[in-house]
Length: 117
Picture (cartoon, rainbow, N blue to C red):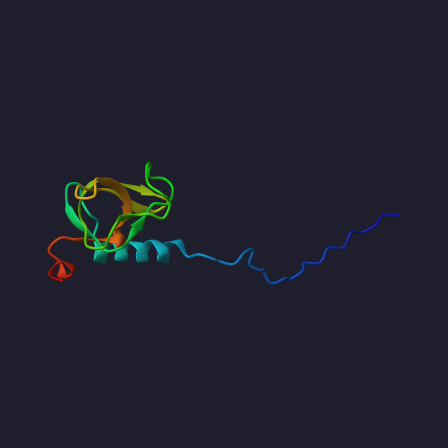
């Protein structure tokens, strides 16, 4: 006696495997727009600090939490690089004799509205 194997075509709605948590294209576009409006700083460009920068333990011969750079201090961009999608700058502040790593949002170009104050 031969048995017939009956197969039925099941009509199952395809379910999504995973939800889209992060739209990479949208994030990339937003970062590019932010960079375009903020502008990237070039090496050798004079800047002013817009934020108080404190020692987080990485700067030698200073106490943790001690201010290294105050808002309004003048500095010079020495180098820039990217790390995990963000741009970082090494800035030299000669008046305070410190080299500090900063983000673009923590500084502004010389000759802007911040200079008038």
